Length: 255
Ligand SMILES: Nc1ncnc2c1ncn2[C@@H]1O[C@H](COP(=O)(O)OP(=O)(O)OP(=O)(O)O)[C@@H](O)[C@H]1O
Image (cartoon, rainbow, N blue to C red; front, top):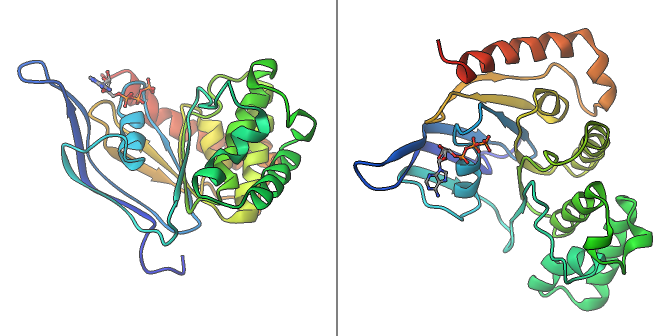
């Protein structure tokens, strides 16, 4: 992928919660890399440690053993999007999108221009001065995406960002994210329950085992980029979804 080092590399990563004798082995040992410009999706059964992995990547949680390295060059390299939006209800939409830029001390005029640009891209221009409470779920999630991307992160970490949305909105936002990340080549680690989402968005789809989650399979959706949501109706899409589902079902319902 051009650069000699991956943007993210996890090696023999494990995480255990609690104290003996009541410990929970939540994760690993797990290894994975995300190359520059790559979009990697992680799917796995409920409770297998997906969020734990992402929280370690975001620096919110320490691994018990192993390492997770992020190799970036900018001072504010990582942005994160959670499923519960993580936007501030007391700030306007524009102030929310500008938030990361303010933290980076981007001059106000430039920050406003960049925020306005992202609001326009995500169809929120008319809501710049609205407060999040007045927005629909899909619009709130667009605000979260605009805020994360406005800082031009070198690495985007997304934990089930569309889980709370209905199926139609989810499809629309998947397609929007696909378009944006393909245009910007944003390096992304994306956690999801949805196989469809993983296949539409991912250069690679990694399948995790039941807890403690390890990577048990990797598939490359056979769709060249730039791709569109139209691939959902391709026979190869259905075939890959079936194959991944078989893998996942074995983990979700142990024999
Ligand atoms: N702070 C914590 N203290 C104790 N146990 C925890 C903690 N955080 C997570 N766990 C446990 O670790 C395991 C993995 O949790 P995690 O949230 O990472 O799974 P997940 O794959 O993201 O789940 P889901 O798909 O249901 O969101 C679970 O058994 C969970 O109960």
